[in-house]
Image 1 (spheres, rainbow, N blue to C red):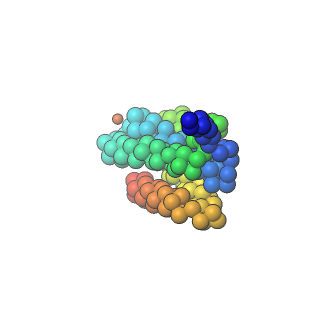
Image 2 (cartoon, helix red, strand yellow):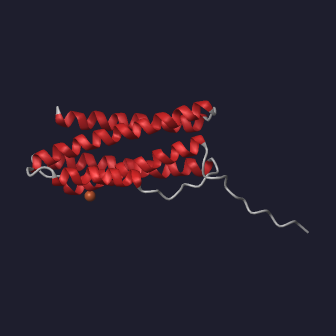
Image 3 (spheres, helix red, strand yellow):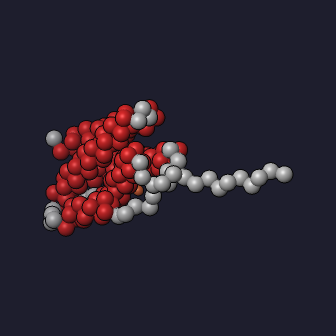
Length: 164
Ligand SMILES: [Fe+2]
């Protein structure tokens, strides 16, 4: 008779790579929420193009969240529920765009500025995760981070082009 299989327990929730990937996940989630919210609320002269661009970006982010979380699971860590701080910071930035400007076009420009800033901070967290990947010779995490950084740099280019 077979011994009952021991229950597989994923590793403790902290390792340099998993910690960094959690941060990438939380930041990407926050950026996703903000981008989707701006898709709904943007107004003004460039409504159609911005509404569409935000749609492309939030859809790309939504898919990325899943890939990042599943990389954490593939490394045998849990994809943690968020502590909330990163998301809260992002949402406060989101409401700034709505509250701080009376003019719709100025609000739209503030949205673009906020998204550029948020994309930049996701890139920063991806760079740290990439560095941890290099320390641990984890090519797959490095590859994922390179792809995420490339996507965010493209988004920043497109957002910047609106406000030129
Ligand atoms: Fe929509």
